[in-house]
Structures are given as structure tokens and as C-alpha cells.
Amino acid sequence: MNGADRSPAPVLVYAAPGFFVLLWSTGFIGAKLGLPYAEPFTFLSVRYAIVALLLVTVSLVTRAPWPNSWAVVGHWAVIGILIHGVNLGGVFSAIHLGLPAGISALFGGLQPLATAVVAGPLLGECMNRRQWAGLFVGLTGVVLVVAEKLDWSGADWPAIVLSLVALFGLTAGTLYQKRFGGALDLRTNATIQFTAATVFIVVPAYFLETGHIDWSGEFVFALSWLVVVLSLGAISLLYMLIRRGAVSKVASVFYLVPPTTAVIAYFLFDETLTPLAVAGMAVAVIGVAMVTRD
Image (cartoon, rainbow, N blue to C red; front, side, top):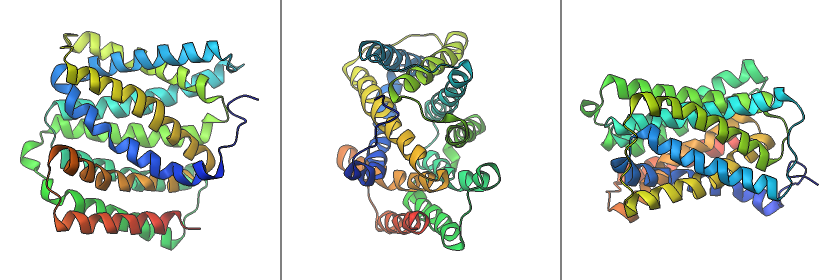
């Protein structure tokens, strides 16, 4: 039986959204620690190349089934380019240009609403009034969490545009997977995605950057974290969630990322956690519950 046929254990199914939010929220660790030592596209090129090499090795050793149609390969390549190339390329570039963390989180908080708006006409996913209200409640919670970190004076237009590009990449990628992804072994579909993303990211890295990397201990840790925890762990959970549920409901869990990131930053980097931010966390949780409850 291949990976696409296996059904996750019930406990994993219920715990997957929480695990995904926790793992995805740690992505800022990699960006915070790694970007001072490498330019964004160069950083991502190395990361994706390592992931692709690991995945193709695992796929070949375990004899994972490969798609029997070039159309399927093309669909998963597009998904990889949108989610890993366009989305994270935009996020890392915006951070590299100095976009404040609060503004970056605010743009990320728009993703569930953008996904829900498009999912209706494109995928035929209908949401009731409670769920629509939950999306706006969740967005309100995100705004409260990042309110005291919104420094628009530190955001220039190129960084803002890149954040919007990242928002488009993640939204389009999740919708595209739900529409065209289909069932494919997790090992081989991830291999296709990260190979396509590597080729996509190498182009701007070659033409726009110097390619210099300072292989410090912090950079190696950041790279390892992003390869294992984000690219192999969080992304796998995201695709499992999209495959098993309505994409608008899955997108709503992204409202919990800024609150979770704020808690992690409080413990690891001594960042402040104000009463307003704590209230925002509670509001975000309520919003997600309103969207996901049947």
C-alpha cells in the first residue's frame, strides 16, 4: 500500500492542526537566525536543494510510487512553486528588506480570508454566516496580537509588495492543491514540489544575489531547522489537512500562527507579551473555532 492510501490514525487527525500551527510558527526562528548570514534566495535555494535530495533518496530507497502522468507532475510542480517559491520567496525577501515582524504577521493573517473568498466560486465551498463571522473575528484577534508591533515607518513599498506576493503564493497554492493536487504518495509529491521550487528559486538567486553564505553555527542550525521541521514536518501536515478538509477551514488555522509565534518569541527571545496580545490570542482561537465547528 502506498503513502496515498494510508489513513492517519484518529489521534493524529485531531492533533494535526495543532501540530501544524506549532511547527509553522517556528519558521520565524529560521528567518531570524539565518538571514543575517545569507541572502534570501540563496538561503532558500540551499534549503530546498537539501530537502529535494533527501526526499528523492527516501523515495528511491523505499520504492515509493511515482505519478504515471506528466500532467500530475506538472500540477505538483506548480503547487511547489507557489507555496515554496512564491510564498516563502516573498516572505524571506520582505524580512531581508527590513519589514517589521508585526506587519509581516498582519499580511499573513489576511490569508484565511483571501482563501475563503476565492474558495467559494472556485471550489464550490459554501460557508455559513457563523463561519464568515469567525473569519473576521480571527482576523481581529491577529490585529490585536500584532497591534503594538505595527511600525509602518519601517516598511518600504518593495517589502510590502513582496508580502502581498507571498500572500498570493500561499493562497493560490493551497487552492490549487485542493483543485488539482489529487491523491499522490507524500514522498514523491514532495520530491516533485521541492525540485520545482529549487529550480524556481535558483534563478533569482543567481541573477540578483552574490551567493555568499557565512556558514556560522546559527546559520547551520537555522538551515537544519527549516529543512526538518518546516519543509518535512509542517508542510506534510498542511497537505494532509488540505486533502482531508475544506480549504477555507484549513486556512483559518493560520490565524493561530501569529499568537503562537508571539508565545515562542516570549520564551526564546524575551520579547514582550502584553495583555492586548493575550486578549488577541483568545479572540483568534474563538474565531478559528467558529470557522471549523460543523
